Image (cartoon, rainbow over all chains, first blue to last red; front, side):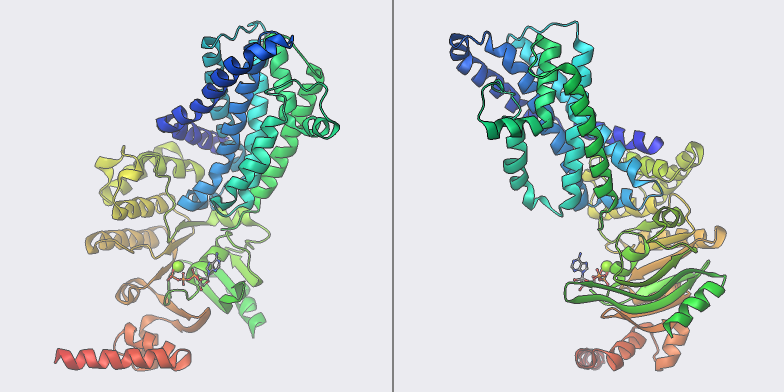
Length: 247
Length: 276
Ligand SMILES: Nc1ncnc2c1ncn2[C@@H]1O[C@H](COP(=O)(O)OP(=O)(O)OP(=O)(O)O)[C@@H](O)[C@H]1O
Ligand SMILES: [Mg+2]
């Protein structure tokens, strides 16, 4: 337990101390909110979709959680290069605990980031229902855990940052664009529909929309079930790959 | 022959590290090439060899960080392959390359280590203070490690390695880049740990005189093979050398890299002549 706690705290400290990182990672969601929100807003309205910022804000919150959590998972590669990873790998504690501590730390940071983006979206004119805020928070935590664990799994297989662009362009970006974060998942071509249905983030976006604006494409029960399963699978995969790291 | 080493190791109750016929290759490089040895409980054991000899690779295999291609290891009776958690309970290590978290302060690095190694809070606090004072970082304990000079980082690293008192302590070139004063202080502390707590010390170094001064026994490794093993005095006697440095050259020269070493030998002779 103490192992999990100390590694969780470490992650939070690192986040809190790197102000440029916090600010930098807020830039993108703010840009998306403003540019897309005001840019596509009128078209969306004309097409009969209603207020676009209402639709967009939950998607952008999910985006910032996705990016932050995958990055947090991938931080293992930095730790490998700076050497700190070795220190934890030889410690007389189970690697499963180490992985859980790191993942919870990364997920907390990502959730925090999501909450900050949520607050910013309020400034941009987002008007959510506040009754289901605890549910929204729970969904944000789930998304964060899923993708931190995924980042951990990937990072456990990588020796350095060379493959990073590849992962960014062929995994993270598609996950984001095919999640329904920017546009509704109705009437899509078959292939894209299948892809978006296999994408855990779709259910995060959907669940969060349900919690915040009471709009739902699938159903809340299905969203939660799918995400819980995905969280378990990725945690399992992540801790398996993490336990096999060699230096 | 190799089977007998293992047999002796197991029967010899005082052996705490037993290595039998260990092999590790990286692609075509044979980093560790069929080595066997054992280290006794309470011993200070030096691992000596030129760059790329396979010292760190051996340590990584002993400390569960790398899986050997072949061979058998017993650490305190446990096999790193099948019981890594039990093995990790028994050793502590100071790595050759950096392994501190530079974003955390000196104190936080020590504290994190103490928690990972289950040191009770009171003992932890006391030892952290004691060690940080020994390496003269106590006044800087609340500075993030990234603001330290490389020697200070090294000192932090070593003091962290000494925080818990394991059965076996690995030190991979612990004193590299340190000033002589700090080096003496640190070795003093290590020797004291060895005497009072019976900590077995396994270290590597390039400094011959350091090895000669502190090690009970020394293994000389070159090109992944152990080419000599014994007490410093024995190694010197076996080669009729006056210093360990000469013994080292005699060993490596005769057996493996005759050409290179004879060049080096000539150079040394010339240097001696020149000094006269
Ligand atoms: N991860 C790796 N991938 C490929 N080759 C490696 C790797 N690690 C070590 N080697 C090779 O194995 C050999 C032994 O390296 P090792 O680090 O064990 O040497 P060493 O005795 O510790 O040397 P030094 O005194 O420089 O620390 C070298 O030839 C090195 O290039
Ligand atoms: Mg080395």
